[in-house]
Length: 431
Image 1: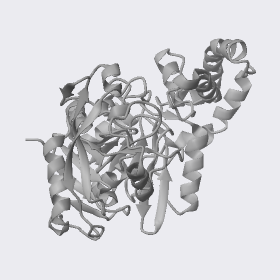
Image 2 (image 1 turned 180 degrees about the vertical axis):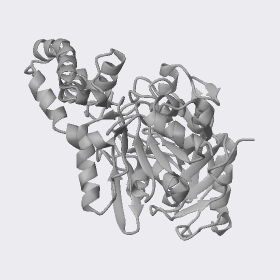
Image 3 (image 1 turned 30 degrees about the vertical axis):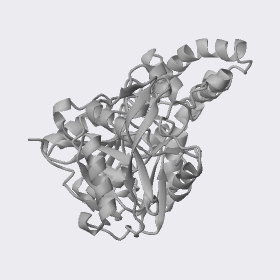
C-alpha cells in the first residue's frame, strides 16, 4: 500500500487531525515530517479534547506507531511535557519513534527567536518565539545539534561551544543580553538523554521497511502550503517545507513511496501572524467566523484572522502539492449565513489574476473577486452522507470542488472525530 501525505492547503489550522482520524485503524504509522512545536492539532475524542503541538496526531490512535522524522525540530522540554500529560490521561505513548537526525531546539535558539522578533518591531514576521527559525538556520549553517549528539557528551559540548561563540557576541553586543554558557545548554539537553534514548531510531529505515511490507504510512505535515519557506507568502512563512515534497526529505523515504496527497482546507480561510491575506474580514463576519469556529491558536492561543474561502489559494495548493483529494473541514461553521461569498480570482491594479501572483508586492495589494452562494440554516452536524446535507450546502461543496482544482473526498460537519462525511476513499492508488 502506498504512503499517504496530508498537508494543509491554506495557512494552517485547517484540521489535519480530522483526516488522520478518518483513516483511523487503516494506518500503521503516522509521521510528522516538518516544523516543531510552533503549530498544533486539536483532536476531539468522545468528550475529551486533546491539544497536540509536537507529537503526530496518530499518537491518539491505538495500534498506530507515531514517528517524529528528521525534518522536525524538537524542543525536548515540550516533547516530554506533552508525553507526560498524555500519559496522565491514560494515552499509551510507548510506540513513539524519533529520528536520530532530527535537530534539537536549544535555549539559545529560543532566546534569539524572541529578541530578534522584538528588534524587528513593525517589520516582525510574527513567529511564535519558540526557537524554530534559529534552529533551522543552524541546521542550514551546519551548526545544528541533533538527537544523536546526545549520546556522545564530548561531541555535544564541542558542537554547543562552536554554535554559541558567534551567538553570544550577538546577544551581548547587539541585543544587550547576557551570554549563555555551554554548561547550561548541555545540562538542559542531557537531562532528557536517558528518557529519550529508547525512542531514538533510524526512522527512515523503519518507514522503508514498513512500506515494503505493505503497511500504511501516513505523512502528516505541520503548518501549511502558504507557510512553506519556498512556496508560501515569503517572508511571512515558517522555516521548513510544509508542502508534500517535504514529506520525503523530512522523513527519509523516496517520492515513489507516495501515492495519495490529501489537502486539508476549511470551508472559509484563516491565518495567524503577519502577512497578506486577501479575503480577511475585519468586520462582524470575521468576528462571527472566529467565534463560531473557535478560531484561536492551539499552540499560541492567538486569535486567528478570518476570511471567506479563497479558491485561488486552493488551486495553487492543489498544483504545488499534486493533490489527489481535499478534505473540507468546518462546513458547519457557515450554517446560518444567508449568502456566502467565495473568492474566485484577484484584482491587482485593474488586472484580473485567476492564479496566485508570484510578485510579493502584487499579492499584498490583491483585492478578492467574489462569487456569492446561497447559505443554509439547517443543523448539519448529524449528516453522515452527502445526500443528508441541505441542498444549498451540497451546492456550496460542489462549487468549491469545481473551482478548487481537486475533488472533495470528505467533509467535516462538526468538531468531534466522527462528525465527518466520507465521499471517496482517501487511501487509493493513482490511475
